[in-house]
Length: 263
Ligand SMILES: Nc1ncnc2c1ncn2[C@@H]1O[C@H](COP(=O)(O)OP(=O)(O)OP(=O)(O)O)[C@@H](O)[C@H]1O
Ligand SMILES: [Mg+2]
Image (cartoon, helix red, strand yellow):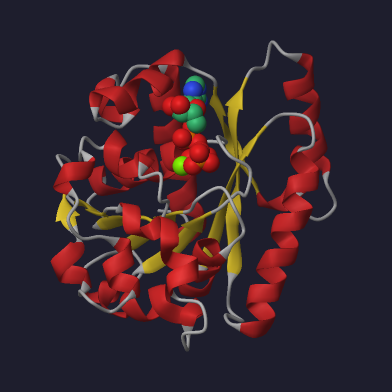
């Protein structure tokens, strides 16, 4: 059973290029395919989720920034994608200046939370694709979210990055969002022929604190995944048989079991 109100997940890792956007877009595609109404909020000024779904910058007149300014409502900025049941709030360039433009404004950390309050009527899941930083936009996402989903590349220093992320989650919990919890940690771009990748996976799974959050599913490095965005499609749609697509489909099943309990 889908949750009875929209469950908002922030897809977060301050490290760049660890597959946050790829995970948000493909998880949303798989969730929509199961009939869950899903919204991706592209909160990254780079706009990779929007572009990767085939929505070019000149088609994005309004987006997450207008929501945060309360200049538009969710229904006005959410646009359909080619995938039934999958909507997108695009990113616009104005997001680049968001932190400075809102400096000194009241309730600046709760802007996104307030803007998404109406999401419950329309969506089962909301996935917020965060930029690679723990700054103002990510704080807004963590304040709006119920759960944190962390894509983690199996590489050197992966655990150090998690410690910093954890401190931010704790700070947001203490000041802004006491009910924030972890959805899980998804290991991405894994190459099991590479010894370091295997060792890092073992370290993260064995970690006293983070180990229990790690999903069983691991996303392999797969060239089809990296080709898909330039075709404006999630890899699951671009090439469903690719190993990366199959892994994301398996991940969506595991994600749903964790979120909604066993079928
Ligand atoms: N499993 C994979 N195999 C091969 N390439 C991948 C895989 N996952 C992601 N990529 C590619 O790696 C790059 C980074 O992925 P993505 O944009 O999803 O990361 P990100 O964490 O959102 O990056 P940023 O921090 O810049 O927002 C992209 O070019 C993407 O297509
Ligand atoms: Mg990204």
